[in-house]
Image (cartoon, rainbow, N blue to C red):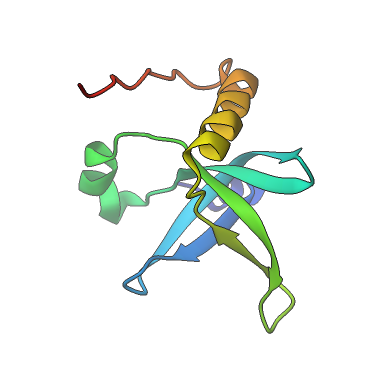
Length: 109
């Protein structure tokens, strides 16, 4: 990816549970019931080509926490409530369907 491409995108870095850094592009943001949410897609460089091929391409949806870190930045939280997640995911999918090819997950019996 060229440096100019990176400058045109809203990129954030997040740490996983193991302290490993991952970069994501913010593709959309919305507010629902006085809560903000972000839709992200992972970014990969050439050294991560194999990982990119294995990625399911799922949209990552996180809630913006009301808490701030010591630098005044905001935390992003996973959405644990299934009803809340489904409601937000449906809104993002409707807003982003022109840009992404979403596949419906099959229900397990």
